[in-house]
Length: 184
Image (cartoon, rainbow, N blue to C red; front, side, top):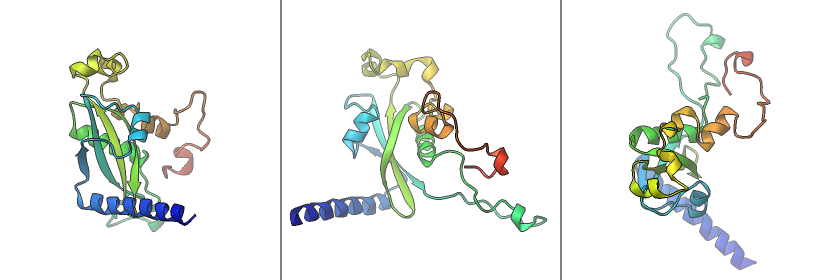
């Protein structure tokens, strides 16, 4: 039993040390290989040419909005509950796609979080790479209808945020307009 407690503590300290290191790095870091190989494989990653993994850091919590100077009732200023209408994972994917314009976002997964940031690892594919075009399982991404997938909400995070992740699944919550446009 004490051995298991020791292993658990060492894993916790490893992940904490990893987060401390990640905080010192820039917000977008290109990786040689994924941090969580099992999650990456589940998201479609293959250890072959044409696949790139990028770790993206995103600020947690709601979004800040510039405060109005004049002529607003405090309750109508729109300062509270100002959230993005997309998930943080989808935002991370879009930021990576804007940086790497020649690559397509395949998928992403959660890598870690602390009190301020959340890190996601985004899997990118080069649609023009010969290895990708020749492979039967990956050549679909090189077709013209699959360009800019992330901006159309066609990744897993995008579909989930749009509410179309499951077939026949209806959104349970009311529309944003019904709630006074106060987002999710």
